Length: 266
Image (cartoon, rainbow, N blue to C red; front, side):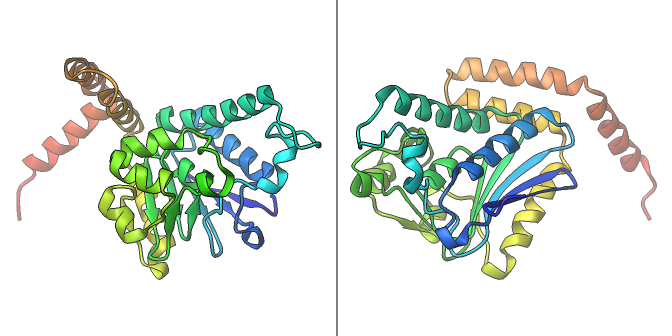
């Protein structure tokens, strides 16, 4: 247990909760390590079916904790920059986001408050995103630091909401509120504050109830459809369905459906 985050596994749902409210949940080294560990467990442990990333307090996260950038981001004590170290750090962040995107299990980000910088880059790497009415999303790197978001956020944001809104958020650094985020496709739903935790929990449990193999192949098919031609994408669907249609789980579901259909109606 860390003072920066809380980790809980309940009925197949692994939840990482940022608990560093006194620092606006700015992502520290322990929080980053917790994310990496949770993603690794999601991939390796069959008991973990869904990963939820959320927070408590006023903010989901204000972004990366830049007060500690001199300890690992390539900045030397004299203020100079070690380019090789910077590239290595960004590469590690890219690999984390890439794994979240590629892992064959669902990852949910539930932002109960403002989600800025690294938090938004993390959000667009996840499969499902939820917001509360007071949640805002922003990429403040250009005006605040004079740099681009470093974890692949611009490319993923552009694919998700299109160049129009990516320019608004990444170039003009304008935030979007929860209502607009829902309208432009940045989030899937907005839960009222008093229903937020329960709504996210119910959705996560609904995914646990589904076939893990079908969920994983659906995620792969969606990712493939975004990067290959239509013929190749359809070929993948056919191969995936061949595997699913011959699985014991599918055959059991078909038999159960047939038995229900054959049962006399009252």
